Image (tube, rainbow, N blue to C red; front, side):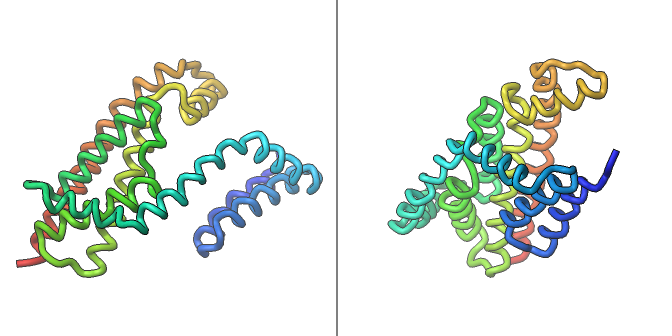
Length: 223
């Protein structure tokens, strides 16, 4: 067995570490893996093109990006901040914990595209979290604002990652099932989904605690 095709993994790691263009890194790694596996370069490019053509419906989701841009241009973030400023008892910690719960529940039901960084975090969740923090802790430094945005993005990631595995008709569950079967442990997608529930609960408790602790640190940092 040749291990040269695994060089594609190293290309991805090095490319991301050096902050090269992610698309170019992934395509370069795919081409290198195919050539090192003994395939003709033209055949590898043909396979990539066929895969893109077969899954071109995925690019339909890009249509929503101009719509979000127009909404932001017309004050979507400002309205999101105003909503939070008018709510009594709203804090950054409570808001992000609530979004984490919503993200996990909807992902567990297969609705993983309801949230996301471009369509939910940037225009809504991050501005609302920032407004809640300012409301409770006063004006924030640029560093603290960036940390709040990062926490909002991380909350979306955690909610999606640990919530979607509860939905048994998703690609990640089928991939895990295939790995277990190849190792001699046959399991049904439903069994894997059930065993993903304790992990999702732990992820909610741990990340929810991190959010609340971060909110408390912001408060202690100011008189």
